Image 1: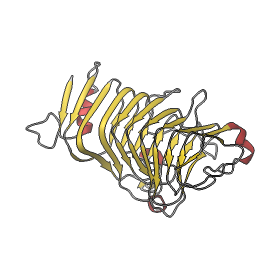
Image 2 (image 1 turned 90 degrees about the horizontal axis):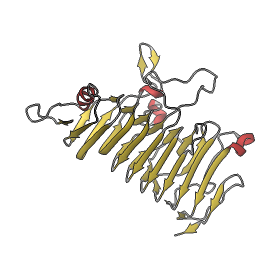
Image 3 (image 1 turned 45 degrees about the horizontal axis):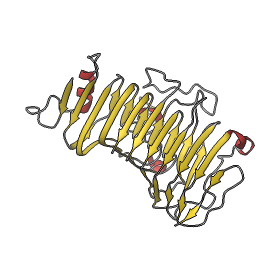
Image 4 (image 1 turned 120 degrees about the vertical axis):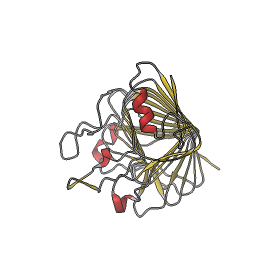
Length: 294
């Protein structure tokens, strides 16, 4: 099955991405959605399996939901801010730009572009653009730091083991730009830390049991201001950069422990055969091999 999305209702099956997704969900078979270039001002939630979305160049999905916005008098919270939420299996997205335009975290709080709670999800030639918490990867930790259950109101199906793949993608953000649990593999991606009043961190992992965490290979990382490679949102936390290149805005110590000094043995932060613009110094609890200066 295949459907088309575009601005002209006379030429396309649907004028919104969500309408096409909802229609595709009625079929038990795999489905492909082709999206015409343009700006789609909407939030999209995908709950079915076996779906492919192929976008023309300059296809932008955007919204402006943020954590500090009030919903019936209460803050919206991080996990109801995503412009694109996927809660399914066997999903492929190609050529889509996803933005959360709510603004910097110091003004609006967390504002997620993409939130994934599923497995076997592939993004190719996509762009994710936001400020704080650009890319959220489930599964989430079981509890908040106060000990309360941490459950997204948008979650319908739980996947304890989750695998996601990002190929030739661009990710822009600031604080905890890529955060969460499960496995995620980033190949030949461009990561960029924007200017912000806050401290920039590329990752904030809360790695699920038996998961390998976040792996970046052959990626290029740049900043408009200083940034760190990551900090552990929860224990254990696993992040590895391999054959990546970092510009001069990477802080000399590379990583931070988020105050979990007594739990560093449960953190796996690694850099293998990476290239750096300026000399680096790493603490003993960081696994670093093959540092090269450009």
